Image 1 (cartoon, rainbow, N blue to C red):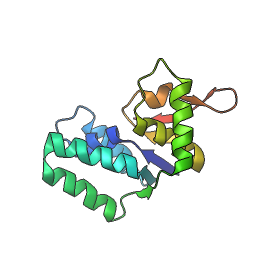
Image 2 (cartoon, rainbow, N blue to C red):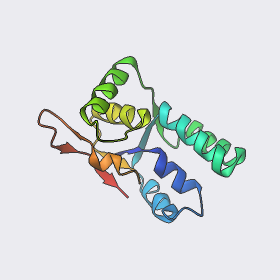
Image 3 (cartoon, rainbow, N blue to C red):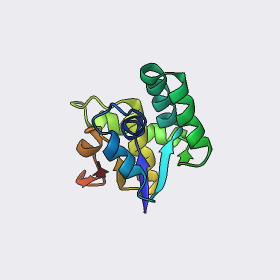
Length: 137
C-alpha cells in the first residue's frame, strides 16, 4: 500500500519530545511505500530547522534524498485544484501545503495519509463531497 506523509508526521518522527513521536515512527516504519510532495519537504525542512536546528533539517532532507519517500512535484494543475479546495471550505484554515497535498493525493488516487493535522480528517472531495481520506495516526 501507499501512504502519503504530511509535515506533521515527518516532524513528530524527528522530534523525540513530540507527544506523537513513537506513533509517527511506527506509522512510517510499516513498510508502506511513502509519498510526499516537494511542498511538504520544504515546509518540513523549515519547521525542523526552526525548532530542532540545522542538523535535524539536514538529516530529514538526506533521508528523503536517500529514498525514504517518493517526492511528487506539485504542478500548475495541482495548484488550480488546491485553490478550488481552499475555496470550497471557507470556514477552514487550510494552508497552501494542505491544499496542494489534497490535490496531489486526489491526482494520484491516494486515500491514506500519515498526519496528526486534523485538516486531513475534515477535507471532503468527490462529486458529492462525501469522500474522505483515511488518516493514519
